[in-house]
Length: 109
Image (tube, rainbow, N blue to C red; front, side, top):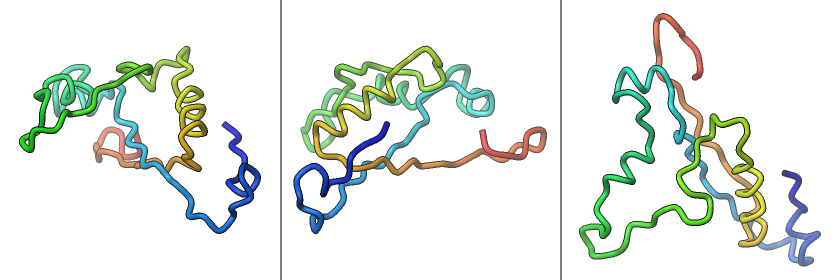
């Protein structure tokens, strides 16, 4: 998604950039399956979480994007996320990348 710079949007180039941390582990992964069980994603943790945290605050749930799967090539969820980011003043996403070490597949997954 090509997002115009903040200065192009409102002339305020001195404002800090707003960067959302993006944790993309919302898709099945074979190594994750072996470690956590078949088709486990972090959505499972959220689905099983209580409605309120221990401080009594509601734990947010997905809204218009739902419980998406980033490995679904037919989904346009990332385009929709970009659109929402622009609407709410987010300038960029910082992707959290990691990989499991597996002797059979020693690389990112």
